Length: 508
Image (cartoon, rainbow, N blue to C red; front, side, top):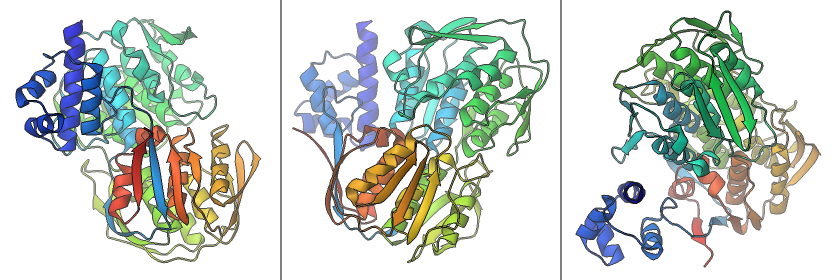
């Protein structure tokens, strides 16, 4: 047991060192020890004190091994004018779906340019704890995933599972592997109560029954139950659709899924499943026809597409600071409504010619942002399932509306309490009125000024506050920013490369 624990710590240290771009010898110099000691640590052959683990974590600036350290805060000096170009990273939500989807495959899955974020790290920790081998291959964040012959659900890492909502997506692939199993309750963003019933109704046709007690999902599977008619999803949710897709992938018959999400992460999962040999018709529509396979055992290589939510984040950074930058590799088919709405508000920009993502399917463009004088839209801004305005992109319009002339109404009808966090902009000088738990009225233009704010517990509103700080006069502090690391890789550092002045620090 101890050897396994030391080995796991060693793997974390090795991965963090490589991610930092250090050799074993360079890390040894930083720690005033020998290269052979570092090698033993990474091989899991060295006893480590808490002091040494903390020193390693500090040297690598890695929360994965920085046990006992306090939260990370960000100090932002503004106002900022950004310039240069930045490339959109691959999708967080697609990366998570593909990691879970790899459980369907008994062969080796290699995922290219995976978003190296905390949400992905949590899923990897859950996978590792049940016996899946994962290995970062290079600095491009290519990830190799090799499943075991038998999964060990009794050893699941509960702490990691409780820190992500995505654990509920394990139900779809696991129902084919085990007759009875348990999963810890999902956590993640604090967005109010979201029912798991849509997942249950999507998976019951495959024989899955789930009881939620004692902080865990208790799942049992009746193998005699098979889908007899089309599965109609009660909500067009992304993760619900993914769960149904993964259940259908190992069902050898043909499954029809109606009211399916056709959003970006669902399409990436479909393209991956096709590489596994699963037949899927209707990708990009709300009706999917899936012909699965009884066993999937292939070595497969797949590159998820770029993240439209990160693209919207970078676009917002340019708009609130009135900066001219180039945002490269934007998945345009998942940004068209957002851009049309911004155009209506007076946003000026140009697009490059379209080109194809590494998955060979998704259409990409480069966006050049231009100086703009914005005004409020004529109608409220609200999200809809794809191809409507993306629910995760809605909060960014709070910061954008704040720098526009006039009143903008945002209606976040999906989440019960997320809109509340947008009133944090008032601490920076914004004029945001909460109409009810779903709606905010924003009056602009705003002259932002710096202050200290505790990071909202929801990912997108947290980033909205950070981006508003870029446009704020003076110094701002955003405290306890772990939630941002859940969804973004090195966001502060990448904004700094465009000219922002953001410093990460911890309380002593």
